[in-house]
Length: 281
Image 1 (cartoon, rainbow, N blue to C red):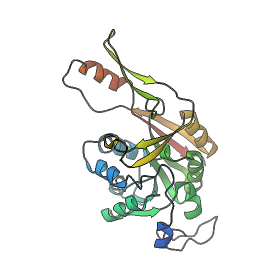
Image 2: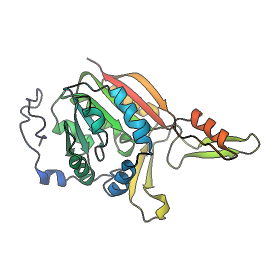
Image 3: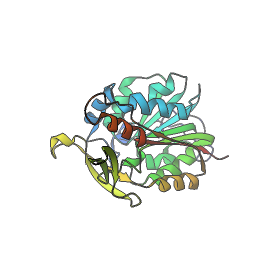
């Protein structure tokens, strides 16, 4: 069933004048990569002001999406809806989709005017939303937690209008590969470097959201893919890449014997990769 937010006629699939049954939403099974079990840890992190989401990711993704008044946008893997105010403050409307009922509930509790939320699997988006309904979509650090990001991207091509924007933000697939990358220190050169043990091989990694809990914290999964995987999926879905950005940390080391080397390393090794693609007409 399609969300009541979308009431106009679906040009390809018939009428969409339906509402979502609450039991329908609660029946969604959380796949690997869902933050349902880690929802409290995740929301607590986002509630802080001193994180990259608020200082770097949300502003950067909004700038690339360039939301316009009266237009509808899709937030894929929206979590607790923290992005919504960035889109609605300029008059845009946003539909947040996430497979975690607990995070969607938090999004609804925000009561951000112009925002709606729906519990569902991102891979099934074309089955639940009208064709070419959205002026754009954004996926912030979410595709990397989905086992089949290609299918999600292809589905988004169905619901995004021609010339609509798709913004994808990832933990940098080259420099931030779970269990396959990390920081190192060269004593002889006084240099902090980034170690990468593997890159081209797709990799599923079991992650503990709170490593300090020593095996007792909530678990989720990350699905590493090389950059070519995402670029090929965009091309297959009828998108063309128009902009690529690599975002570095805004943190600064002010003291300590390695402060200078740490700051240099932050400037050289980006944390995030941002892709802006536009759907071809």
